Image (cartoon, rainbow, N blue to C red; front, side, top):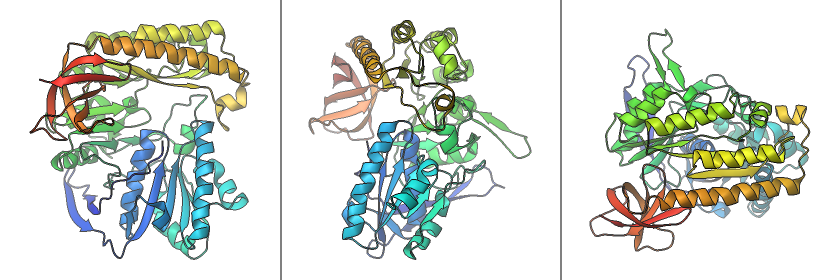
Length: 478
């Protein structure tokens, strides 16, 4: 779903880090003059990392005098932050670009740019063949946006899709677009070294590199001081986070970073995404169990429940390894909720192997899953080596079976919470009624409950669950 309702926020905290004073951060408040500012409109697709990147882009644009707008028709610059994970996402982007092109025709001088994961693969098509955009910018080249915009203003179509082994944007304080003022994302690393055969991320986002641990803690601290009460640490594989000082006198792994952020304040909740089954350690699990404010929720993508298919996917673990990690999570953190990603109909998958995925959903007792049928992505190992030989109707049938089972498991999972009381962080009004609040518990489940005088967004409260669907818990304040 694209972001078409960004929150206007003209206050920018410009953050610079003095490397000689590790962890010390200086903030300088600056306002964009609304009357003088040009307007930019941005839509984001795909994973949480893309939405986080859009907030980095917003900060870079603010430095050059741009302010965000919700209305694309009044914008001077339209950007679309793209995703290449599935073909459907790319089709959506192409449709949106044609909408933007009509605005360009009606409003001469408006610039259009493509950002993110589609940039490298489709730069020639967008710039030369269809001429729908003025600039194409890859995930590691956002600092070059001011130069590319200046060139586009002079009639030059610009492109920068170079990948970096160093860029982490650690010194940029993101502008929180579409923020509720309570929850925020913090990118702790970029890129991916896991060459899963179905995935384009290593080709679109480059090699894995971790951000300075001090800058992560500084950003989380600043967010807490501004009133935010929950941060989600983001990475393609957060469990492989590892940062060291240049002289290797200090190193920080993910469990240690998690602890540092948790220690900022007991009222600052900490989440993270995404974990890789081959890397999540008992040290991480024990750290989660130790701190009440580290949420008891792990997104642990399985992709397939069959060992042969997992090998074809190059996931580097098998069915037994995954099951052992699930058992370890429930042993060390008994109240933890686990969610997953599932791909149906991967190359050569049999009905028996599909049945292994179904049985894994029941074994792991996922609270929810993101479920898709396999979509071959150009340039991936699977596209080069394997035939996409499962008919579409079979893929859809298997996907429907997975969705049906997951809904049943989710419903039972939530029904088991009836009668329990949870600590809930209030995030806003319920979608269905402004007489109700909504908020999540530690297990990342959404609760809806009647408002009570004196409570406001950003407060913690105790909610007793009275009823449940497969997606939502309904309760009352205690």
